[in-house]
Amino acid sequence: MQDQLPLEGMPRRLYSCTPSRLNAWLDCRRRYRFSYLDRPQPSKGPAWAHTSVGSSVHNALAAWWREPYERRTPLTAAILVTNGWIAEGFRDAQQSAEWLGRARDLVSGYVATLDPADDPVGVERTVATRTGVIAVSGRIDRLDRRGDELVVVDYKTGRRPLTQDDARSSLALAIYAVAATRMMRTPARAVELHHLPTGEIVEWRHTEESLGRHLRRAEEIALEASTADERYREIMGPPAARTRRPSGAAGGRSGAASGKGAPTAAQGARGPSGGSQGAREDRPSVGPARVPDELDALLAPNPGPLCGWCDFRRHCPEGQAAAPDRRPWDALAE
Ligand code: SF4
Image 1 (cartoon, rainbow, N blue to C red):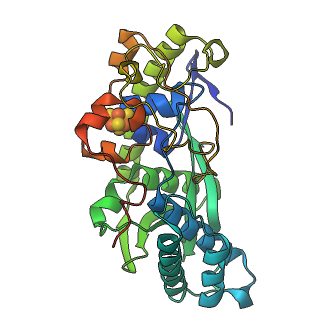
Image 2: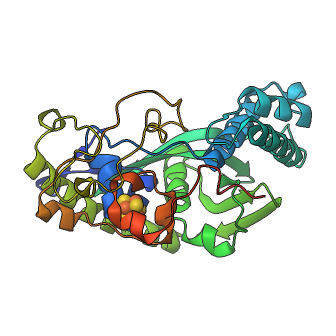
């Protein structure tokens, strides 16, 4: 994707991002730094069981649509869940097996409500668009055509019931709608959250105006984040100039300097970032970059109850103080 666009006589570097990156900036700037700026990336905590369930379900639903029409049955869906099951993060094999059964029921029950002949326009479809400020891309779970319009569909597998506000306020869904409209030259105004545990579908219908508001909000976030990115690069230099650090030995104000949050061997390391969870590997743990006070203030932590679920809490004393440690399977419903 091109990332330079001349703007009214002044070349401006577009901020390349995903909705996840923009939301990370809003949620916690230290987590943003650990996720997108410190290289090598600090080691994440162990895989989460609820993420394994979510990824397994999403993968099976995508694979189901790639099956030939005659095989798009609830039984095929259940088989796809079994074949692609990600068993990481569970307490033990028995818990994993229990959740595999639940996921099979969830996915087969959901596809029973679908018309297998109604092929979506896209499944796990990557869409991208740009403005004068951002080049943004992301992947839509499913893109349907209904009449003359496209509908952005997002699957949800968490416990929490969804509200219309979740669909209305989602920056990601709005960006996907804008990107799909531009790429397919077909209007996409409706966004839907499909909550598999309850079978509930929560819809929001955007207007040009509401989509424009989301896009402007994305640009505002991007301007803040890109300014911080530039300052980080000015101070820290290119990634190659930064040294690999053993976990617990990171200095500066990044958190691990105090020694708190240093990972234990039992915590292990997560697999490569970016994928679902990735296989756990016996690789050396990596701590955060040593940053000066200026960068620590610019990319400050935002401790709160959700810190218990942060992949980087081992490197963050403030986050550890704000929320109790969570076991990898704690977010699963009983
Ligand atoms: S533990 Fe909390 S404060 Fe620390 S990086 Fe994670 S989200 Fe931010």
